[in-house]
Length: 50
Image (cartoon, rainbow, N blue to C red; front, side, top):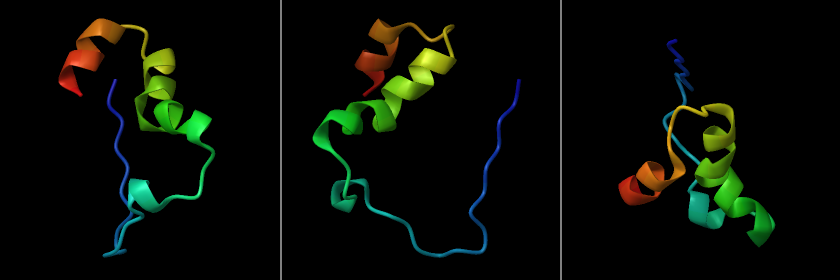
């Protein structure tokens, strides 16, 4: 399976530290949602990569 995304031609980005989101959502947005979808990635391995 291959997933590709591009925001071309935008040169700017949204800094994750300046997003106006509830603190409880941050860990899900920064990786836990992906771990829930991609079950083949062990959570312990992902924690070590961060």
